[in-house]
Image (tube, rainbow, N blue to C red):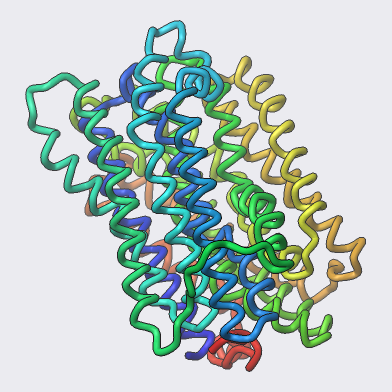
Length: 513
C-alpha cells in the first residue's frame, strides 16, 4: 500500500473517530450541561479517555514496532503473545487498585470539586469507567501488530466502536426522567463495555491474518519483552503529552465553577486536527522513520522528519486560525442546546480560542517525538514531558487567577510551546535537525496563507455574526477553499509535495509483512 493510501486510510479513520466524538460530546452537553454532575463525570472520564486517545493514536507503537521489527516472524509472534498476556495481568491488577482507591484518585484529579460535594460522584464514575482501559490498551497492542504488517483498516476503524457505543447509550438515556447522576453512571459503564467491543474487533482482524501474529503461552522473560515493557510506559506518557497537559489544567480548572466542563469541550474541538496529525505520525510515519534508522540512513530520517513537520504545520496553522476566529460560533453551534446555555458556550469559546494558540506547537511536538522514538531517545522525551506538566500547573494557576478558565487554557498552550521547543533542542543536540532556509521558507509561506484565511474569516463573520449550522459549514468550507488557494499561490504546497506523498514506503517499513 502506498504512503498516500495508508495516510488517507489512517487520516479518514481518525477523522471519522473525531466526528463521532463530536456527536458524542454534543449529546453530552445537551444531556449533562456544565454543572457539578457534568464536571464530576468529565473529570472521571479524563483518565480512561486519556488512555483511549494515547493508545488509540499509536502510543504503544514506539515501544512495540522497533522491538518486534528486529525479530523473525515466529519469534515476533511469541514475544507478542508474551506482551499481550503480561499486559493483561498488569492491567487487571491496576484496575483493581483503581477500584479500591477511586476516592483518592478523585481528589487527585479534581480537588476543587470537593467544595461542590461532587467528589463521591467522581469516584463512582471512575470505578464504572476505568475498566475500559483494559480493552483499549490490549486492542492497541493488536493494532500495532496489524500496522507492522501493513494492515491499517481494522486498527484504524476499531476505535469507532467506543464512540458509537457511547452515542447509542446517550440516545437511550437522554429522554429518561431519571436524575443527571443516574444518566452519567450509565454512560461511564457503557464506556467500559465499548472497550471490550474494540478489543474484539482487533482480535478478529488478527485471527484472519494469513500467518499467526500472536502465539499465546506462559509469558517468558526475554530481552525483547523487557525492552517493550520498559519502553512502553515512557512512550505512552510522551505520546500523550498534550493530553497530560490538559489533565494538569483540569486539576486547576476544578476550582472554577463549570471550569472542568468548559475546558473539556474546548479541548475536544482542538483534538480533531491534533488527532489527525498524531494518527498519521504514529501509524504511518513512525514505521518509516524506524526503517530508515535501522538502515543507517540518517539523512533519509532527517528528510522524512522535516517533511512531516512542514505537513503538520500545513494542517495545524490554518486549523488554529479557524479555532481562534470561529471559537464562538463553533461553541454555540456544537454545544448550545438543552442543559448547555449561552454562558457555557461563551466560556467554552474563550477556552477554545486560547487552546487554539497552542495547536501548532502540540502538532510539532507529536511529529518531533516520532523521530526521538525511532532513535530510542525516551529519556529526553520524558524529561521534556515532565517540564511541560510543571509549566502547565504553574502557568495555568497564574494565568487562571487573572483570566479565569481562558487563562488556564492559555497556560496549556504555553506548555505545548515549551514542550515542542525542548524536543527540538534535543533533536538539534543529536544532530538530527537544524532550522534551514527551505524549512523556514515553507513555514513562513504557510503562515502567510493562514493570515489570508484569518482575514477572510473575519470579513465573513462581519456579514454573518451569528451563523447557524449551515453558516458555520459555509464558513469552514469557504475557509478551506481560501486557504488551499492561498497556500498554492504562495507555494506553501507544490507539485513536488504531492508527488512525494504518492511514493511507496521503504521496503523495510513493515519488516514482518
